[in-house]
Length: 245
Image (cartoon, rainbow, N blue to C red):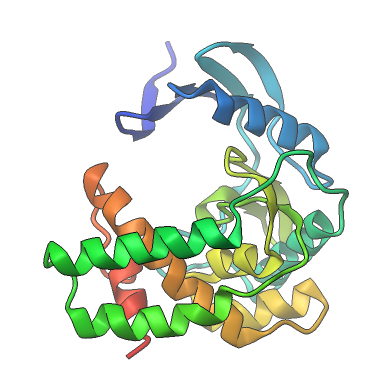
């Protein structure tokens, strides 16, 4: 009998692994709808959909291992990081999905709300929040929408040697800023930013990527705390924010 491994679990969703099959259980079927449609549209490798019986989506496991984990040193080669950048570029060059992403106004409003919550509840020092709020301003500018993954963290990118074998967790996919994907991919791994940009193959505004690091981290802290994760772990979101000082 195959063992059941709990990959991630909280009150919104859970992912289990049974042998070579991942079972994703999501209370919000809209996210599952987006995930299935996005994977069908994406021009890069994604997991095979084995079956779907709401609220469960069954996906085949990808070969290889994750590019890395936030808060841990990545053992992947510079070439593998460059390949991740190239995969992001291929995605961003693809036709847009039909559904929109978050608007600039929504992001700015969300950021204001999270900054207030962080300070009011004493989660982070006011000067740290204020500094990162100023840094984040550079990301809040008009952009040309592209097909974005929306949560392109390194644990979602699988590699075998220097090759990308697939990208998982597409529930946040939609129209968005290309530099947001690159920022999420390199969050907490600034030393690999040059490799990713080299693979991406075009000039990017590094200040905007750094702004997205601050913005993404501040937006994530409350969600992580409320869902049982620790954003203050070494190398994670709070350390990313402190590195901006």
